[in-house]
Image (cartoon, rainbow, N blue to C red; front, side, top):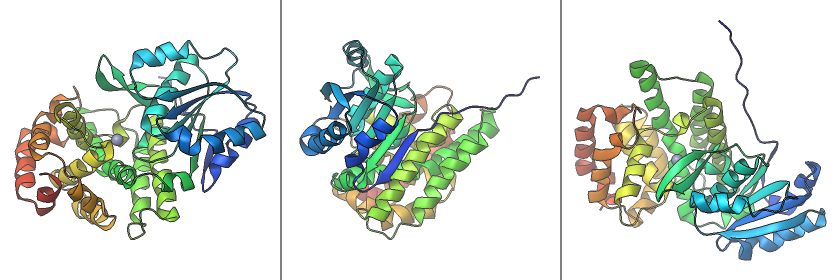
Length: 353
Ligand SMILES: [Zn+2]
């Protein structure tokens, strides 16, 4: 039998601090890039475009293509990939999830390097090896490649709406339940398990727990939030699939996306589902509860509640969202237990109306 060590990709440019947007051109030039195609999320060019252009211009980087991304249909991404000038040697995505998902997949099709510049941190997608796109009208996670570069300007992140920060918090804390689901799946179904990926994902949560008393808009908190979300992307690359970052809590959120008339942000749904699933798992329930309380996540969710009826239905159908994906919800008794919890728990009554 032949054993071989797994090789993984990691970002070659990795910069996280205040004012980094001004250094983008310098970092790209150091990597010998000359011609960039830029993809903005809606409204982002107006806020950060000048800084980015000045930085690229001062380093002699040409902007050969520019577009604003409003939809994430995979057909449009493929179409765009053939419109990009041949001289392009790097793609830049700047803004929230849509522009990053779009340009990451476009770069994957063209086999070109992709530089991710998130201006908000609502989930771990800015450094993940996949893109969330619309495939035949349905939101799907499709394989792409981990970004060549990740540049996060904490000053920019500070200006993002608080909903984005709380969404990032919810997506991050979900690694507690996702990791546990993966472990039980490995035990019960023999699913492939990667200790290294598990440890990385687990450590990202342990790190952020130290900062639970910090203001969520402080530089310290945001720096560690970004770092942790980023390392989740790396853990998925190591595992070769999304298991370290996505378990029963993500199934509930995906189901809610399908049912709800007006779904909320990914990480808000996932955060609430994590609270419920950690109770079912009997796994770090108090830690999850305390963190979501201390950071103000529950207060935010109570002011912007989800629809209880749809959420209950989402719990019921969650196991059918993904085939052959064992989680705590695969045991029917736990669905009933979750519904009972939602009915009687004080926090659930506030965040699910
Ligand atoms: Zn997520």
